[in-house]
Length: 509
Image (cartoon, rainbow, N blue to C red):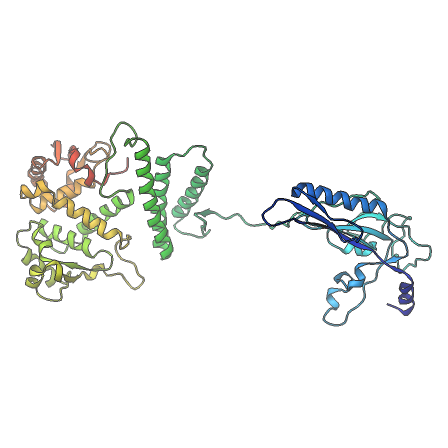
């Protein structure tokens, strides 16, 4: 700025500036107070923020009507060395004064939240450069103004805006609070506050997660709760999150899957209590030992794994491998006592254990005799190497350490059923009981949809010839496990009795 210009500014008067504020009157109260920085203005108290905002705007308008911009004033904000007067590019080099210009105006700037309004007497160039400023009125350009002071020729009373603004008028308007800036964001698929990665594979899993997220959000918009529907959604979520955890090896997802299982069980129980024990149609609710579909699927997965990985032939070996697998499924290790083996009804448990250790499928710290003699207070630790998790933490099963004892307890309940023990049921009969418990409908019908179970499937699961199945079916009928059983050359049909329904793992309809 030249010395002549500085001299001229010394002869001009400093622009005026005042602020009207809206503040809380006291803590815990809805009342507000309106204050003005002009010393002659008294503070006002209003009962609400809306009333206070109206009063604040009216007070500011009264000031704007009473005063007008003075043509001989210079920018009020300039006295504070504001950023408008120092160009950002020059801050790290040297402070260059902003070249003010244009007519003198009264400009108003409002807080985004509507908590204060500030009126400033400044040049039109500074008003145009101030974000959110609105020109209320303009002073006539003084006759002595130079071209440097006013880069754009305009009639008196019209502010000299930059090319980003259009000429305003003398309307005395107070700007409304500015809205918070919005940022464009790419839509993200979410479920349970988790972002579903766009590159998650398999695609079917990602589609299931997205659909579940939409269904949960839709459920939250319902006017009336539907606990049966919510339980179904939680069960689907448990399965999907378990698969997601398998894909990503993220422990938090597995923990979320278990929480969904618990939520599904609790919701299902609550639904039964609200409906007086009716689950859907006219069927009474069944208090099952394994309560949710996820547990039922895990039980079926263990039986299928044992069918494919038993190292020795015969039903006795199949039943023993099944029970040892359930004891060690999570880490490949577990504890065993002699009674666990003798209660299985095996023909020669000692010989079977010898063969399992001999082929390397089972590892013991001592002899088989020590195992058979062990009691609960000195249980024998056992190891099944094929079930020990690999270096990446994965194994043949996806359930956690809390699920394992539930499945083991369920299988123990089935094979040690009181009537099976009294009938001295063979290992084959007990394996058939386990298989039928996982291959029946919710009402106890054998097979899915009342179609029965293929004889070939049953023979493979029990490890017997198909011709031996009729004897096993007769044993289960005598032990009050089956009624109306009919075995043909291709299928077994029938109905599980009401007393064993709590031990079943129903197939999906």
